Structure formats: structure tokens, C-alpha cells
Length: 272
Image (cartoon, rainbow, N blue to C red; front, side, top):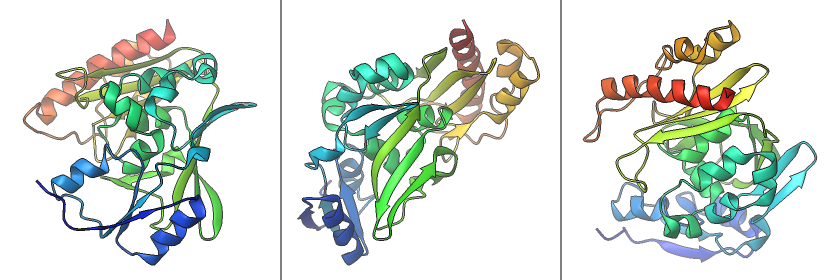
């Protein structure tokens, strides 16, 4: 299909992007375009103005910053996957970025665009949720930090205000045990179910992909692990509090069963 008519603005700075967003109530940011443009072609999204920030090179970086690693929001998935700082300090992020889509998607799509899109079937949101990452947003009133636990608010909705730009993602260094597993029909497809597990103080932080309206922490699994349960027993609680979708690729019941298998395998790998 053909997108609905829209105006186009190319921002030369973050401040210009914020100003353009504030001037157009129905404006949307365009970064890599691999999330927004397909939605526009299907007319699921129909912004009146596109504000293009894809050429803001100062938002593309991966930087070691003491106990954290800072990732610019416009860093392409390919660059995230190959960043030495992430391989050394937080390898689960680099690994997950390398599993996104196909090479064309990874060379164009950005980590910030993927996160701000808020798709519960996306790989990176659940990984960042398991890591307790911090998101840095800039708006007309300055900068603020948003914890991952409060960032994803509903289906395709986040805590970002209309006139805010996501500028940076900060992840804690975590080179200990970790695992990201997903099940999909083809390598470039969205995950039917995904699991991110990061070893933490003898237990693990676990987040789920495509098991609800947002990426979500597996609270039942984490509680069981903190109580001394082994991975197999803890995985039996993986579907607690979830609301997985039913579609042409799998029913909700199938996803509830599948997530228990993937959580068990991810925990065993993370704790090995």
C-alpha cells in the first residue's frame, strides 16, 4: 500500500528535532525507518510530518563509561553487534543485535528506533529490560533519565513525551553469565517468544519477548530463583502474569508452553 500524505523535515540537530516535534502535533521521528515505514505503508501509522534524524552522526557511538557502557540512540544494529566495548563489557547486547532481522535491517535499523518503537516482539527491548538499562531523553525542558522498568508503557507506547528525543542508552557492565534465546520460523522473522537472562547475585534477571503488550520481566521466575529453585523448577512459572497473543503463527497456549522451555534453556546457559 501507499502511505498517507505527509510532510518531511530533515533535522540538523537534536534541538531542531525537538522544535519540529513541538511544532507539529502529529509528527513522528524517522531514524532507520525499518519500524515506522512499514507501519505507514500499511496505514497503521499515519503521521502528518516525518522528522528525519537519521543523519545526526553525533548520536551514533558505543562508549565505555566507567561501570556502564553508553550507546548512542542512532547506533546501527550492525555497529552494536560489532562494538568491542560491548563484547568485553556487556556481550548480551552485542549478541542480540546480531540476531535482529537480516543484514540489510542491521545496517539501517538503529537501537534507539527499535526501543522507542516499543514493539513487544522486538529483541532489544527485553534484553535492555533484563539489564535494568537506563534511557536518556532530551526535550524542551532538558534531559531526563528513564529506567527500563518504567519505559515501556503499552503496545507500541513508551514513556517518551511527544516532543522528546531518545539520545542515549546506558547498560551496566555485565560480562558474567547471560543468554538470549528466541524461537522463530525463519532467522529474519520476529520472535514467537524470546527470553533474555542475565546472571545476578546467584540468581538471574529474566525478561520476555512477545509475551504481552510490552516486553516484561518474568517476576515468578526471578522469585523462584531467589528462593533457591533450580532452572527447571523456576521455568515452570515463566508464564505467570503474561498475556501472549494468538495469531497465525502460534496460539497463546503454544506460547505459554514454549516460554517455559526457552526460560529453562536460557537459565541453564546463563548459569553454566
